[in-house]
Length: 121
Image (tube, rainbow, N blue to C red; front, side, top):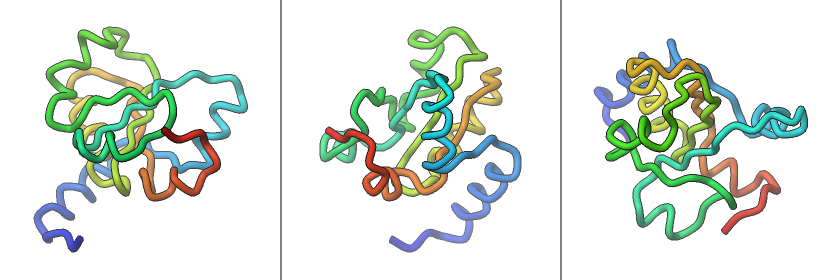
């Protein structure tokens, strides 16, 4: 799906300030024994169609409303993914504004995760 120039500007502005990793970086975190919460920020129908096993579903539409209840520790590592890494960058930016210091957008998103070898549901 082609993205509008306004949306891409928002995403690029967010990517300039948020932490990002890719699938290799995420897997390296796990290998080091780190335990970030993997958060799927896609829509309900996208999550239902398939997701990484154990991922928490907090879609972009509700995450800002619910994150502090589910994860009040604002230093907790949160690896956020969407379809390709655009919406997750916007979510990471929002969470940063809310005081979350370790919100990380997964570049490549679900497209990359499907090819990663991680367990999927």
